[in-house]
Length: 337
Image (cartoon, rainbow, N blue to C red):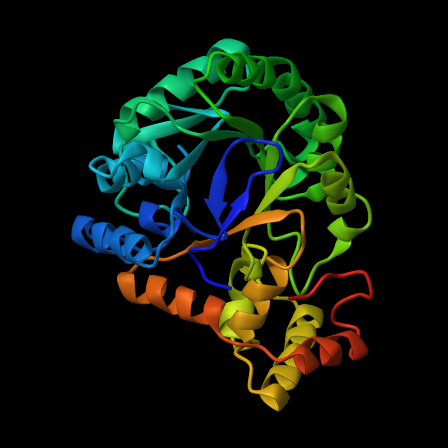
């Protein structure tokens, strides 16, 4: 399989490349990169045939969208697919008063949650202005999960289903969007949203991988049944499936616990036995499921982008997947390439 291969986004008249570029790192998460480096990273993705790009107001407090728009502005608009997200508004504020978290050297805007109808419309319009583009193709309701919202999640979810969904449904009906969905860290939230509203697709971060396959129980089969596509982010589970079980390895946005380190060591043993890069195994496993339309990968340099493509396209023998099943790393119901 090539990174440039395309898949239909479920029932929507939209094709996405099976490998896509996410813009978290390009938004200066943990480390600042230059405008030139950001531009060259986009160009490396484009040169590899990648034509799906994902961003969000959260990434760099708007910087991710600014850089995405700058990189794509002179490309033929019908030649690529673009997704962003709603659920946060950006408000200008003195830098010293803003909590930036892990974002470095970003734009001076405070993030404010807003899942109301009016707030969603405002967020959508603001994103288009930062992108300096006339439309996005896909829009996800962002971070209405327990991981992000904690005890407030049930009420936030209700607000999003009543407010954000109505706004996105209107934009879809008016032709401003081709597809609408939910982008979260928990498959259970995606499943609940699918049972309540008419969504086209979902962006699921980190919950379908060599380390986690709980979404095979009901959510992914339901998506196949209803012809709903899933885009996967966090295929490396925040880093450990790229770095391996090394000191300081990160899992689910934090230090990897010992039981996860042990599981990755077992995967690495199988990888060594079959001369398969761990990263290749992680990426190709995800995209083997029929519900998965695209795998979003991050990169902060053209070299990283080219490395992602190389890993994704590396040949893997059938015996490798059989060995992972014998080891209990992947379940009997998990599709493989």
